[in-house]
Image (cartoon, rainbow, N blue to C red):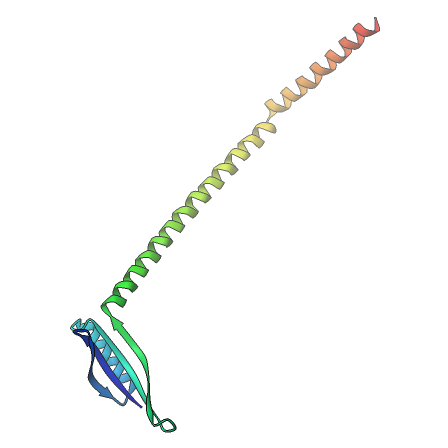
Length: 139
């Protein structure tokens, strides 16, 4: 099993180094990527298949300017989304708090002494009106 570091330059992938150790290949690829000399770098794992008498290849590491840009944009979008959701939750919580306060004020008014007195006065007034109406009907 071998590992190739390949760089993308002038529209082609070119082999830059061979390694027998995966960790060493990945370490070197990351170092090369940080240097920003190449627009794209990848590490390809090459495995010899005895039965088919051919190499099986797979990419174990990939880094490019486009991927870095995409990752940065994705991170920025996620941050904006978190901020928007946070503000939306704050507004929703504030709305619920105001509704609760208004409900508490209404309930406080309903249970206040003034309201109880008004209800009592209304009941007495209706009672007097009913008695007066019965008196007029009775003669």
